[in-house]
Image 1 (tube, rainbow over the protein chains, first blue to last red):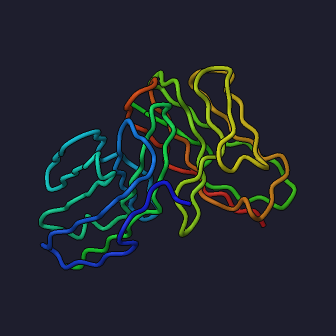
Image 2 (image 1 turned 45 degrees about the horizontal axis):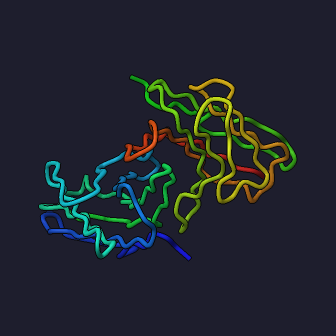
Image 3 (image 1 turned 90 degrees about the horizontal axis):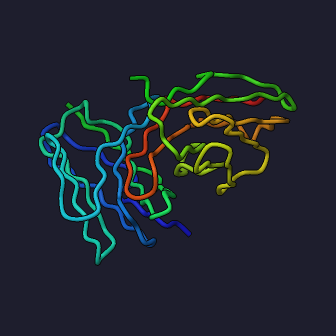
Length: 108
Length: 113
């Protein structure tokens, strides 16, 4: 069983397209995290949210606590956005449950 | 600001050899974690620590040992490496309980022949 499910697993988009990555979780959380991992690279935190919506540049993350669902949106996608995006649910004990990631490729 | 530093970045071992991965953080974080990342699978927790001198098992602890003698360091040991331990290992840290950002090291790629 997976506590965190992401969709889609793979996504290819044309430069400029609006992208949505979805995350559903089954555990009680204190926060939901979105992470980014470039090929061969480390993992960086994009967002941590426990309610509502957050925006950083062209990236927007939303969460619906009642439905246990979060989405990551990328507006005006660019080839440099190509990466694996990982959703992680954190409980109050600082335990993290990770999705398997969404591999995004943005074609020029 | 170094954040979380892992050493070594790459290592090739023969089956049965031992090694230690070192994780160091300079953010005074209480929580530290070791994960492994394998193709098609999410990050899986090996061991974690909620403070200096404490360690606990995660999801996949077999074949690994850890120590947290100092708050800033979290060591992951492989006593007798097996090919199944070929993976990319990530160390991460977070401050005290509650909603906290998880900070990752750059990863250590281990190959066991």
